[in-house]
Image 1 (cartoon, one colour):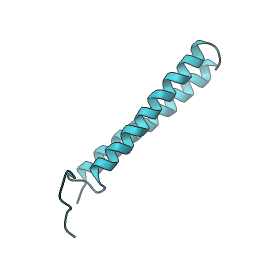
Image 2 (cartoon, one colour):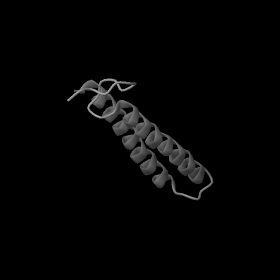
Image 3 (tube, helix red, strand yellow):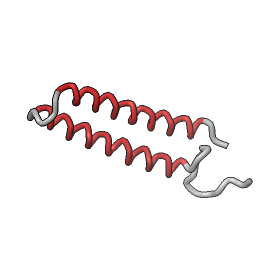
Length: 76
């Protein structure tokens, strides 16, 4: 199978699409993290909810970053 020409660099999946997806997910996680932090500051959410939410969002962000890096490294 021939490799398509253009801006696609090495990657199992289209690198531009993976990076766009990762950017969208990371941006959403940052927005949600800020929102939950503001709720916790103003006591609309408990502190326990803040830490659990930030930890969950951190795991999602880290997994998107790792997936993007692995896709670029192990391309065909």
